[in-house]
Amino acid sequence: MKTWILDPAELDRNSADKVGGKAAMLAELLRHDIPIPAFFVVSSETHGQFASRYEGSTGDSASLPEELITEIKDGMSRLFSYNADSTYYAVRSSGVGEDSTALSFAGQFESYLGLRNLSEVIQAVKDCWASARSERLAAYCRSRNVPVLSKFAVIIQEMILADASGVIFTAHPLTGSTEDMLIESNFGLGTSLVQGQATPDRFHITRSGLHVAEKQIGTKRKFATLNPDGGTHTIPTPADQASRPSITDSQASDLAKLAVQIEAIAGVPQDIEWAVYEGRPFILQSRPITRGH
Image 1 (tube, rainbow, N blue to C red):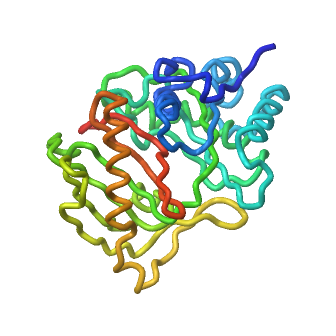
Image 2 (tube, rainbow, N blue to C red; image 1 turned 180 degrees about the horizontal axis):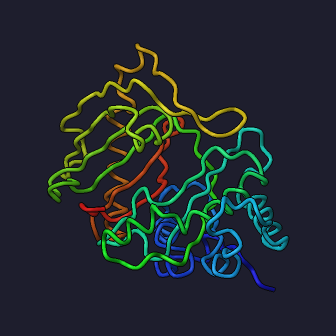
């Protein structure tokens, strides 16, 4: 029987042709016991088989094949707290050829956050496929003189109800210096940082000892959170909270320890997205640092 989705246990860093660089790296990290939110992947082969129905549209004009819908539903039931009232899902593209040491394709692919049910997840898969032929992606590839990516997988992942989120660079993102690491963070979900809606806290972590050597507390006037009925929104940060650090020094050190492990697994300096929930860190994505993106 043909299967269209793949579990992380079936994947590793050598699976990028099946599931794209983003998903392959997550699977490899999971093999090394890095804390990753539960996920599975709609394979790039599935995209090649079906996506022509959706490309160039919003994905509303055609339904996914019933066998694929059934597999996605089964995957959600096996791997997630499916149907739990508190469960949210994230759906994001994972391009074959994305997240290399030369190009990151950062910000070129759609992500759909705060999804609440199977119907919303199915629509997001179609929309990911439709966005694979966006003019934005084509222009990005033209400007860097590389072929437009043509094979896409889709990650379906259980969302962390983050108390704080951010990024950690295991080398300086501008100079490449590896003398220390940099963490940027804000309360809530990471979208407030990605979209430039908040000035983050910054923690400089020493390589030797992995402790906070310096920190600057950002204004953090806004943060992103989940809507009870699905999706996300940005709200003002209470004045008494905005002046406080979004993570503790101890949490920053714990994130730095994970980052060192991830860099060792990857073999090159990493740009890592993370979230903290009830004091526990989770890794959401890791890719090589590329100065030109």
